[in-house]
Amino acid sequence: MNESISILENDRQVGELPAERFRLDTSTDVLSPNFRLDFNTARVPDGTLYSAASPGFLFHSHDDGRSWQRRLLTELAQGDWQSSDKWLGQRIRGFGISGDDLLLLVDDTASEQPGLSVACSRDGGETWEHAGRIDPSPFDRVAADASGFYCLPDGSILLSVQLSYVSETGKEEDLPEEKQGIWSHIYRSQDNGQTWSEKYPVGDQTCETQLLLKQDGSMLAVIRRQGNLPEGIWKTLFLSDSLDMGRTWENLRQFSPEVGSCHGEALQLSDGRVILLYHKRYPYTDGDIRAHVSHDGGKTWEPQIYIVCNGHGYPGSVVLPDDTIVTVTGDEQMTENAKVIPPGHTAQTIRWQIT
Image 1 (tube, rainbow, N blue to C red):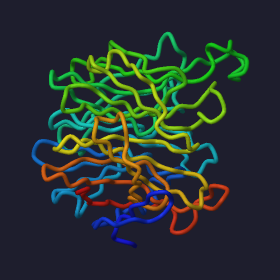
Image 2: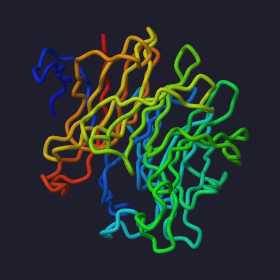
Image 3: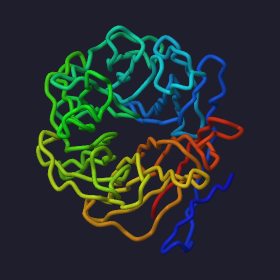
C-alpha cells in the first residue's frame, strides 16, 4: 500500500505528501456489508477517536488513529445483508458526539414504521438507549447516508437528513413535478438528541449534506445534489453558506462539475485553511478519495488535487490539535460495473498533514 499522498495539477503529479496508513479490521460473519463502507469520525474530550460505518461497525482509537479496537453493534444492525436490496434491514446511517456521549442515526426499513431514530451511548459504545425519532412531516420519507451530528457552542446539536414525498403508486414520476426529488434539511435538538423539533431546508434536490462550523462562526455545507435537475448536475458536489448557525442557507454553488464527485466533507486547520475531501466514484475501476484546499473559507480553491486514498467509500475525518488529519474511509476496489472485487469490503485510516 503506497504510504504517500500524490499531489496532482492538470492531471500531472507535481508532488507528494508523507502519510501513515493503517488497516481496519472489517472481516465479520455477523455483519456482511453489501454496500460501501461509509464512515463518520469524531473525537471526544479525552482525545479518544471514534469512527462508525454502516451496517454496524464502531471503532475507537486511543493513540490518534494509529491502532483501533472494534465493536460490532449487532443490537443496532439487523437484517439480511446478503440481500440484493442494499437498503433491507436496520443499519447505521450516521454518527457523531455530544460531549462524551456517542450518537448514532439508525435506519429501520423493515419495521412497521420505517424511518430514522437516534441512539445514545454514555459508556463508549458498550450500551445504547433510544434517544429520539426524526419526524419527516409534512414529507413522507426520511433518509440519510453517513450523516453527522454537529454540536454547537450553545449545546444544541445539528443533524442533516434528506426528505422526500412518496406517491400512492410508489413511483416518483407519478408525483407532481414540484414534489419529485429530495431535499436536505438540518434538524436541531436542544436536549442531547431526545427531541428534534426544528428543521431548516438547505436547498432543492439536495442530499448527503455535511457541515463545518468555521472559526469565524459561519457554517459551510458540503452537499450532494441529484434529482429533478438539469444534465451535468446529477451526483455532483455543491457548497452553501450559513451565517445563523444553520437556520438559513445561501450561495448554493457547484464545487465540481464532474458527475460522481460526492459524498464530501469539510475540515478547518488552525491557520484557517479549509480542506474538502470527497469520493470520486467514476469510472468505478479508478475510484478514489480526493482533497482540495481553500485559503478563503471555501470561496475559492487551489488547483492542486490530493489523492488521499484509492478505492471506494465515504471518508470521515478529524483534525488533531497539531493539524494532523485522521481520515477513516472505505477503500474497496470495483469492476467497471460496480462489483466489489477481492478482498471485498475493506477500510483504512490515513494520518496526514498539509504543510
